[in-house]
Length: 409
Ligand code: PLP
Image (cartoon, rainbow, N blue to C red; front, side):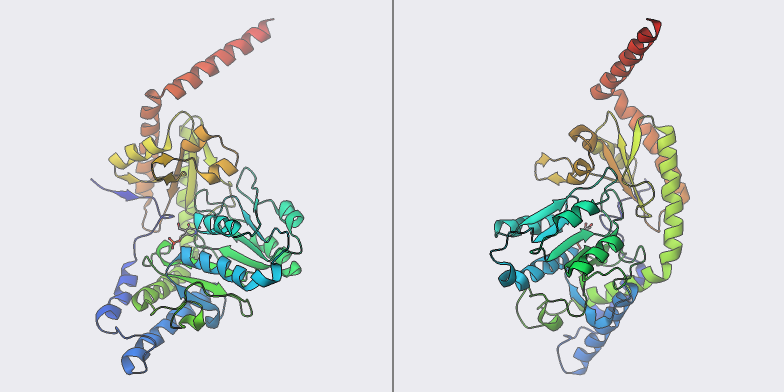
């Protein structure tokens, strides 16, 4: 059976060109980038070449990029690193010390919750029904003790792109450090870190057809932070540990390809996405789009279908070779509704009826047409077995009858 992968926000296949670029660094150029001999300098040079490629995409300079093991580590280093630096300054102040949003990735949210346990005050901004953060609330909540604002560039579940430019103007004018989790946007949509007034920006390799287990953090020149991993002093002392050269070379190559293909990818993916959205909303009754209608990632479509559960939809689609995802995260054994979908105002049942489709450059128009038909069939099948759906139909019928009676009187 043909399989169709539609979960690119979770991870992407590694581009064959990236694999090709990485392979010699396992067996041929395996030196330690800190060594002084030629094996070491080879590794060092390729690492610096990658650093330049990563910097180029966000119009930063090479000196402002450090390599990490993941987007999660970059988020942790950005937030905990700034907090550690400011600890003394803000002791005994009331806060909020950090302002973030309710819809951040757990790499940011759980880091903030951890810091709350350490005594820091964190404010979680609300979002509107599309998932856009409340800028007025941000302005209101900033206090003299606020030193960090952390807002994601685009949401990984619903694809909404946040108004970072506006946020950057506010944080710059108040002299507050701005961290942006750009794991879902780096290499996918244009970013100018300087123009957007971003001080720290998190990047991950495996979302852009690069390898897993490698990431990067942009640190604007002059931004002060403490390391969270201590050791041999690699990466300007901010991230000790022998550098993962094959991974770094892979990230550099993936960044280079992303930059070359960005314009074409945006155009192609937007075309596929909009076709899918239009088809689903026109052909499946009581289906809705989660997230912003236009201010969204080119590859993200997140739907809500009344009367069915996202999990059973995923499993049924998987039986037909279609790999998608729910909007909700499974926390160990308990199935929790997604914090993102709850924050945009859905109730638990609605949040459980959501489906995330994230497209990639290898998806074809034929695949999307197959998926559209598959979705119509699967939703129909699941609704025919759904007591919730039957109840809602009965309720609708009853409502119409009552309305008709109302008109008669
Ligand atoms: N931030 C966002 C917005 C993400 O989507 C992800 C991955 O799902 C991460 C952070 C974590 O990145 P990584 O898997 O590289 O740790």
